[in-house]
Length: 308
Image (cartoon, rainbow, N blue to C red):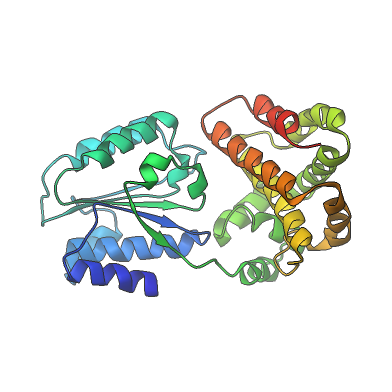
């Protein structure tokens, strides 16, 4: 993998940065490269050391992830305390934060201060599939690693081979690139009904804004927790991305393949700039939801600030 090779070259030529931001939509690949890179920095071929790291038992290594919709400030405060200590087994300390965009505002501010004045020989690896939700001040303090887009069609086919409805598999590909996450969501929730509600709400956004405002109640009745609300925003985002693709004549990247004729029809209602404005509103909604703003307000703002 060429991303790992670039990082290995930096390590061997003694040109490590204090912070890396991994960006892309293939979370699995980014996690794999992050672990391999951490292994190289801390172990450099020592098998016993590598085993400890893979089991998350290495004293100079910290890995932060969360199944919740946010990474709490307390997790970051504990990380900062650990990373401020001297290395125990080697020269470096390394920490990885998965889904970095999940940090609360307080958590982002805490990590920003840490990135501004990092302890010597401390390496941060931040992973994000939604880098647009990360503060510009954090972007500016990291070396960026851009990962190639994942093969969505392969991901969708794999889910279908596992018995998932294709429309649902396509919908989930807008939210995750991890097979197990997608399967768990499909088993736990009625995603067929959720998809119907989302598509109907997107149509109301385009045709009847007063009814779209009322329709927020129906959306949140089906997206009843933070995980489903974030999924819903990703799917709404995909709907408007499909519109943008149709507008410029790119049709091989559609998420809603069964709705192509409908989406093409709706593209006549908006200019490309209006679609981009809607895309920006949905990105802003993601940020607000992660910041624990009331979901009703978040979705209402999409209607109010979106385009006619």
